[in-house]
Image (tube, rainbow, N blue to C red; front, top):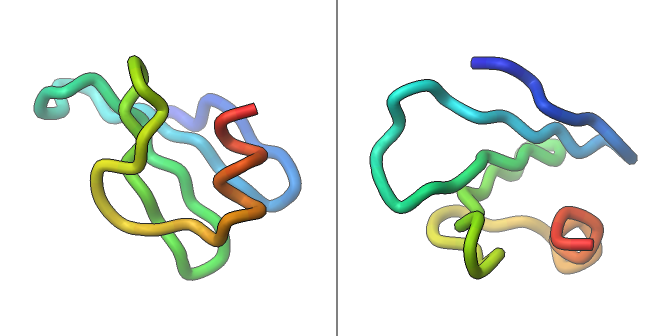
Length: 57
């Protein structure tokens, strides 16, 4: 799983051959969220509001 980006303690990963819909994984501390690429909605997990705002910026 390649790390695509890391900023302010947030790590963004893409998994190869992962299930639809197209999404990426965002990690921040003990939190993990799957974020849909098209809508930027969290489809699973959670992130603190401030971390989520930085991810979708």
